[in-house]
Image 1 (tube, one colour):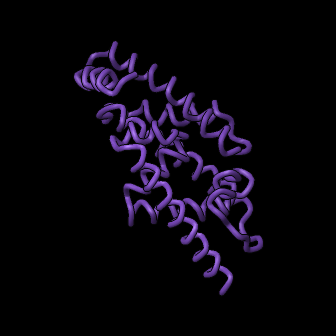
Image 2 (image 1 turned 45 degrees about the vertical axis):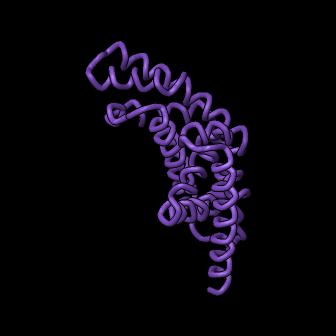
Image 3 (image 1 turned 30 degrees about the vertical axis):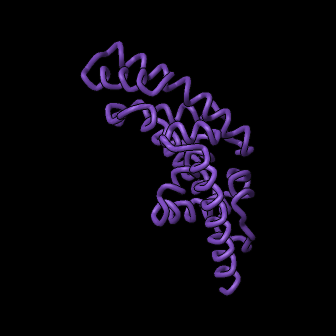
Length: 192
């Protein structure tokens, strides 16, 4: 669905049109299924199933904040954030069950790929992404959409309203920044 069509439905929904709300929530469910399947297929998230991720994200997006959607772009940002938060919460819960343990080397790719098997590594990565969002918001948003919503470069560019080249540049910067941050974190952990 195009940006203008989704935005029109959201505007009608925000004006109290119940049919528009039902249509928007139906579209959201379809988009969430697609995003969750792509996200989990790309990064082997372990024990979490796409349906679990969709259900949890849907509940968050269809709840009280549903009326805060502004347009399709905003929805994708919220969906990426919801999936990110769900995966972080699951990793924290799993890590809390395994407190302690040996120090481990964490890389960006291994942390994303092994979020369920290695919640510690995923949480280290999550902290680095939070810092990236604080220091370089545009690059952080690209990482959120690319890795948590599973969007392609073209889809990310469309959602952010920028050129593919800009997404590529921000993605290269974000990866380098995160690799450096994870290496710094590794060195700091090794010195303790």
